[in-house]
Length: 306
Image (cartoon, rainbow, N blue to C red; front, side):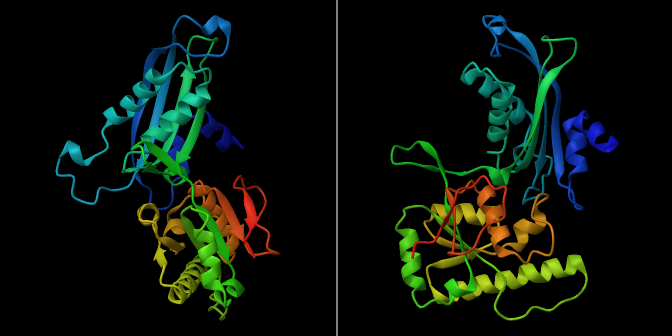
């Protein structure tokens, strides 16, 4: 409890460090950036500015090439302050929550940004600082594509869980046709294969073995229909959706790299599918009749068309 309270009031960088995986990512931060802002839902806050303080920490994926002291190969601090300035200039807002959300979303558009911690505080509304703090993951940001007018729009795919009976069904091709006919990108997820999997008695090792077994099942599905393309990373998923490909998700990379993936031995393919649906901002999670996803999801759920 003491640790939770300490972290609740610590700088976002402390929260980032506390929730980092065993192999933590690099981080950059902007601390105590104070800007005069007209913001607030109360009448007394309209028509004049108040001081608002921003603290932002961004976790980064490593650049694929050596940095070589080249500013163009890093995520510059200026990109964070520009994100703040851009959102402040867009429109007058009532809520700090809205402002923090928009700043995080803009920062996570940067190719290297993986997770953003954003704290926004009003400094003139009371005896202390009044604020909010949010954490947003790049995986939770919807894919963005250009529409027919050349304008950027969010893309929300269908995430579909297929059990082994659905994979082995004679009408698999027709079922995939029906999914594609809905006009949305399709991401197929599978569970454990029908054959038994080696048991080790070691939780971390077993988790990896189970994930690899699920990936074998993904390749088994892909072998049944040439339209299916097996992918593992978020970048591959985004690219395949833009290309209109039908995706089969190989989960080990995203699950093992994530700090908020489902706990346990990773045997429940439907729970993994639900996790993915939340992290790609899916329009819907579809599953075979008779199954039920774990509770607590914000993604709409339905059964596969018969």
